[in-house]
Image 1 (cartoon, one colour):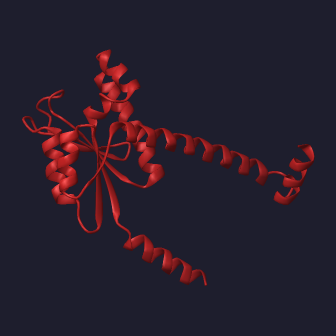
Image 2 (image 1 turned 90 degrees about the horizontal axis):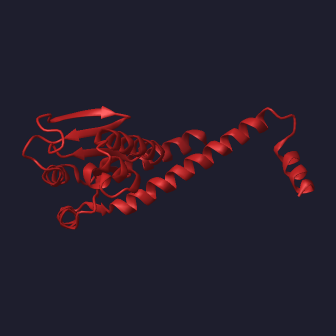
Image 3 (image 1 turned 120 degrees about the vertical axis):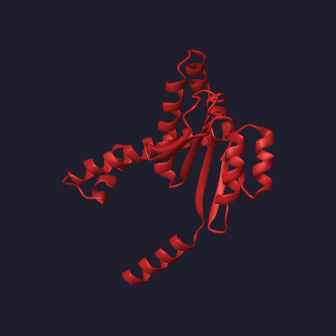
Length: 184
């Protein structure tokens, strides 16, 4: 029975579309309040790092692969792609905007096996990627999702600590529930 369950789970896991979230980095920085604050204090590197850190937690919790794209305009001459916090970070080549990079990648990556979502509040960009079959998400929607996931992580952490406490307790789960009812 265990082998059958594992085979079924493996089938569904392999048959489901993979998700890729492409994030227009500077667009998001310009929309999230705490990142705008850093940007206005000329702390763009801190804003980028904070964005990457939050998206990394989001990626780890949801299992959605994330690629964050930054224009070369703020860091000229450094076209590169690298991994940071288990995210793929892309700085476009000089003269190429994040929008044009995203449009090109959506055309390549959005396939039968991969569903691409683009996070940006640029309406023109949203329409272009939508026409190419990708989904779109505004900066505010992504901000809400990240906040929701942050709360879920905190709740899971609290539950894990509680379970850890209960594991070390001489009382069974049933006994603990009965004691809680008596207490209340």
